Amino acid sequence: MSRAAYPPPRTIWDGINPIRMIGELSETRYWMYLLLLPSAMLITAVVLYPTVYGMQMSFREMRLNRPDLGTDWVLFKHYARMLADPIFWTSLRNTAVWVTSSIALEFLIGLIAALALNRNLPGTKLLAVLILLPYFLPNVVAGHMWALMLDPRMGVINDLLVKTGLLVGYKAWFADPATAMAAAIIVETWHSFPFFTLLIMAGLKGIPADLYKAADIDGAGALAQLRLITLPMLKTIIAAAVILRVIGLVNSPDLLLILTSGGPGRSTQVLSLYAFQMAYKDFNFGYAGALSVVMFVLLMLFAWAYIRLSKVNQD
Amino acid sequence: MAQTRSGSKLLWDVISYAVLVLLALVCVFPIIWTFLTSIKVEEDIVTREMVYFPTRFTFDWYVRLWSQSGYPVLVMNSLMVTSLTVLICLLTGTIASYAFSRFHFPGRTQLMLGYLVVRMFPAVLMIIPLFIVMRQVGLLDSTHGLAIAYTSFLLPLFVWMLKGFFDAAPKELESAARIDGSTRLGAMFRIVIPIARNGLVATCVFVAIAAWNEYLFALMLTTSQGSRTWPVGLQLMVGEFQLPWGMLAAGGMISILPVIVLFAIVQRVMVAGITAGAVKG
Image (cartoon, rainbow over all chains, first blue to last red):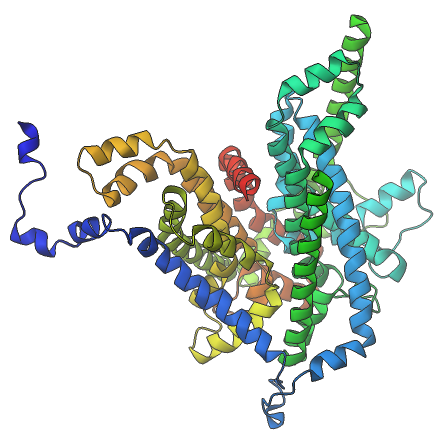
C-alpha cells in the first residue's frame, strides 16, 4: 500500500527543480562520465596542456628576457646544446648520486623502522607518530632546521661531534664540495624515509602469520625469515615505493634549492635544479623545457625498466 | 629450545625498542632544537660555548616576526591558497573518486592510470607553461591562480587516496537505499559520502598540508607581497636581509604548528588512506 504513493507524483515544480533534474540524470548510463568530467577537464587544463606546451617549447627559441630573438622553431638546437654542455653532464651525474644514495638510505632506514613498528610492542604507537612526522613537514623548514644544526659557527651537530671527539673542529658542511652532497642526502633521508616506513608497514600487515609460524617450526632464524619471506612478499610494494620516490627525487629540486642552490661550485647541481634555474633566473624557457623533457624521458625509461626487471625476477 | 626462542624474542624486543627510540629522537630533535632556538635570547644563540638550554626564555622573536616582517600577510595568503585548493579538490575530486570506486565502464583503467601518470611529469615542465598561460589570463601572482596550479599534482592524489576510502565503504547500504527508490545521486550524498566521512576529512587534511608546504610553484607563480605564500616569503627574508636565526626559527615553528596539530589529529586515518591508495596503485 505504502509503495503506491512512492515515488510521489510529479508536479510542475519537479520539472524545474535542479536537484531532481540531476537526480534523474544520475540514472542515465552517462552518469559516471558526468562525474568524471570536471576533474578530467581541470587536469587537462593544468597538466596535459602545459606539458604538451612545454614539450613543443623545447623545440623553440623562447627567452623571456630577449624578445628580439622571437619564438621561432629551432628543432633540436637545445638538445644539441645539451650534449655539449658540461653542466648538463655534471648535473646528470649528480642526479644519479643524489637519487641512488637517498633511495638506498631511505629504504634501509624505512624498512628497519617498519619492521620494528610491526612488532606492535606496547608504547610504540606514539613513537610511530614521531617517526612519521618529518615526512609531513615543509621542505623550507626542514632545510632551515638542518642548516641551523649544521651551521659552521654555531651548529649543534658540529658541537656534538667535537665533544664526542669525532671531529677536530667545526666544519662548514655545505661550503665544502666534498661534504655538501652527503649533508644534503642526510637531510633528504631524514625528511623522506618515513614514506618507505608507511608503505612497508602497510605491506607487512598483508603477510599471513602462518608463513612465519611454518618457518619457525623449520628452524629458520629471524634474518632467514626476513630474506626468504618478508622481502619477497613485499616485492610489489617496494617496487611501487621506489618508483614513487624516484619520481619525487628526480623531479623536485626544492630541498637542494633551499640548502645549497647547487653549490659550492656545481657539486650539488642536479638536473631538476638546473632546469628550474634556467627558467627562473635566465628565463631561457626553451632550454629549460628541453632539460625537463630529457628528465621526463629518463624517468619513463627507468620506470619501464624497473617494472620489467621486478617482474622478470618474480618468474 | 623453547627457552632460546623466548630468549631471542626478548632480544629482538629490546633491539626494536632501542631502534625506535633512537629513530624517534633523530626525527624530533631538529624540531625541538628549532623550538629551543626560537625562545633563546640572541646571546644564547650566537655564543662561543654552545648553550643547549636557554638561560632566559623570550618570545621576542615571535613578536618581532609577527609585527615587523609582514608574516601575517604571508600566512593569510597561504591560508587562502590552501583552502581554495582543498575546495577545488573537494568539488571536482570527490565525485570523480566516487565514479572510479563504484562504476565499471569502458576506459576506466586507462583513465585511472592517467591520473597516476600525471605525477611523473617534471614540475618544471608544467611550471613554465603555467607561468606563460597564467600571465596571459591574468592569474599570475594571484592566490586563485596558485590554487589552480596546485590541483595539477594534488587533485590526482586526492582522487586516488579518497577512492581507497570509498572502496572500503560497504555497498549494501547503498543498494538498500536504491531499492527504496533513492536515485544514484541521493545514495551518493546521503549514504556513501557520510560513511566515508573520516576518510574524506583525512584526504582533505593531506592535500591541505601539501598545499600549505609547497614551495616551487609558489616561487615561480607569485611575484608580490599580495599573493606570496609563507614558504616563499620566509625564504626571501633569509636571502634579503640576513634574517637572524631566532626569527627564522620562530617563523619555522609558527608555520609547522598547524601541520603538526592536524597530523596528530587525523594521522591514523590518513596513514591508512595513503597506504591503501599505494597498495592498490
